[in-house]
Length: 469
Image 1: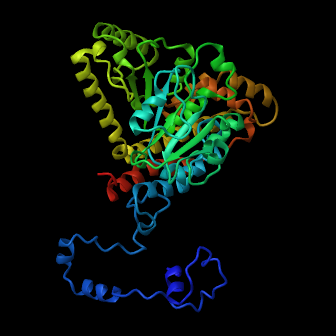
Image 2: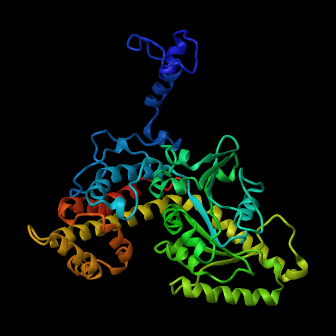
Image 3: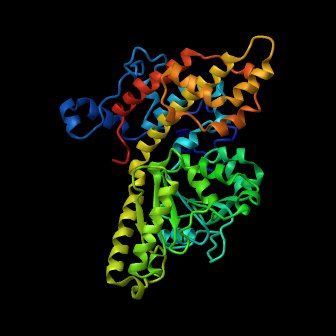
């Protein structure tokens, strides 16, 4: 509005106009032609007619409280929130973040959230052993290569590449992208420069990328080189991306069905995100129908030993590349099957933006529950410490018997065992802390989070609908 006022006052409109030395106090407000007439018409129009014309109802006064719960300690005014995501941001800053900061949740589980984490587009991550067709799958989906894509039979993609929408085609280095406030990747700085040098963002203008972002990953290698020769925590990075992603595609091909110990570790790091995992058997036209049946059986056998779920994982069979299908191998039956499977997978991908809002709420509630359990564990360890003598010995005993301590917390607060963190990882991080400096349990903070889960989020869902419906 300042820019409009300056233009109407006779100033030349330039990029530096707002920074120029202008007397804004004595600047007349901008004249909006026709606005008074519109407002006058609206006032004269009966209310029933306004509703018929599809106009939005008159907003409540700023003093109207948004949440009806009397238990909710901090009220949020209706005027301060315009969408579900906006409401989640407010709830996080006012109720969940104080609990996370007090009990060092960011060091143990996940970095603190920023605005860009809430505003980010849905993400799809591709995981698999080398040369299973991950980069080719992205090329097939976009009908073109992304900047910096390398495709070959050998392990070509040596870095994590985020393919997202942008005004022009370019590759942005990892260190640059991690410090950009409008990008949701600031949490990756915890993995150090060794990882950021193997991370980049490829931007390109594409209609599909307006709806979601794709994450291409290095092929999981077999043997010691996966663990010892990568200069960063590969499993930790995939776990970080898994928490942010809306869909995780595990790619296999008929000649790489063996799940190595390293790939098994990577799949184990996706624990808690089973609902996001889809399995893709790629390059299926390289074998005939009889062999494909055996390959499918072998794949399900291998997956059954790794994915510890009683339900069957959804497996898409097809050949996701731009080459014409080998009908000699696949046959007419195979061709029809591949086309149906490809349509099903594309439908799954198309539904991602519709489910993004629900997924965000789901992840937020999961995080709140994890933060609450974390606070109970940390405060319990603080309570077990002696006041004066034998602190070091007691701390070491608590670390060694951490599983028993988890059991005590579970019984005391009646918590589900499946919600507790990984004991080994927790023990590893605890080694760098002094327990007597931990915070004692703050019931007020726990109550705030309980109110948020019990009253505020349901009220938020009642007031705002999914923007994609």
